[in-house]
Length: 471
Image 1 (tube, helix red, strand yellow):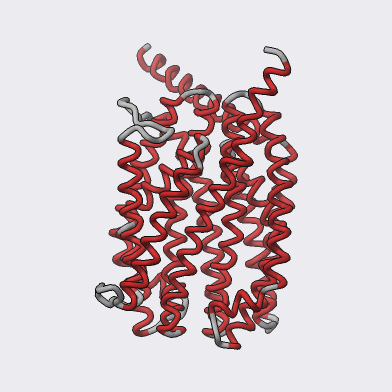
Image 2 (cartoon, rainbow, N blue to C red):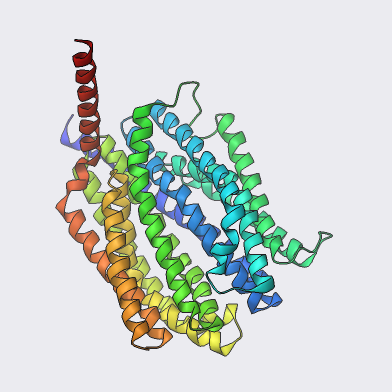
């Protein structure tokens, strides 16, 4: 093949990353984040205690969801690699195995949450009726997590294969149902029973169920880019590879969410105003996070596909190009957030005490936007290459040196809540610096190959042991 034809074979993949993958993924994630904000807005008239209960339950639920997302990280990497290698049968096997694992985990969580829901939401200082409501809210969401797991895996598989548009319109349809049902059930509108804040939880669960049913129909009727094939999908080798990629990703997400929950607990020590402001601020932050996630998933998909096609250098070029675009977009977002911090905050709260805290936090969020672009884009590249250990190490370093150490110093020095918020900046400075260093070293390009060699060595060693025993 000539140099020209090789280059032409790469271009469609690169265009897919920039135009057909990142954009729809960002829109889809924004829609999901807006549902959480809509729930806060809908229950807002029920009082600050109701808002705090929803925030606490949502925060724990999002932490639990990331157990599922850690598995979809492996799904994305393995499906993208198989797709780049033109092995659609393997992509189908990976998706089916991932569905089996995530649904099994979700069913286990349904049982576990009956015993730990109250203690988990209780760490935020909720008491009485608000504690009971938050625990019940969390339990309701967990019941429907099986359907969310199916959605997450199918969506990850489609994006890894290059179809980011189908998950968006399915999510959009689910969100419309979610918001309408939430309003109807919280306030008893349109002939529905009035359930209070729990209505928002039921609305989310029902929307997950309906969206999952739609995805299942499309999948089984062969209308998705990844089509179900009648074949055996389980193998010990495939399971081992999925677990190898998923476990470090799970550790990373556990560290991330533990740090957020611990950080929220520290903030709660400064009073309800500071806690409520941080809870809303995290949801505002999630709007910018989903932009970063769009580039993360796009980069992960393209790196996986290029490595599957044995185009490591093109994978690196795609990553740097995506980083430049992500950096520019998130820098613009930083300016928007910083300049309009009070206007944005006043949409959610009327209390001046809460608003002052929220404005300060929003400014901190604005400052870290460019560094988030580095974290998400380069992190996506590493995960797409099958290297999930490096992001886990980086996450630990940022959390420990940034949030834990700096927060402890500020807290025990008797400094105010604004200084506690500022610990976020140290966290992102550390992580973005480490990502740049590790990505430039280039070891990620051979992660899948190293994994394959290790599996072959284990097989050879096992075969040798059997031969030795037979002799």
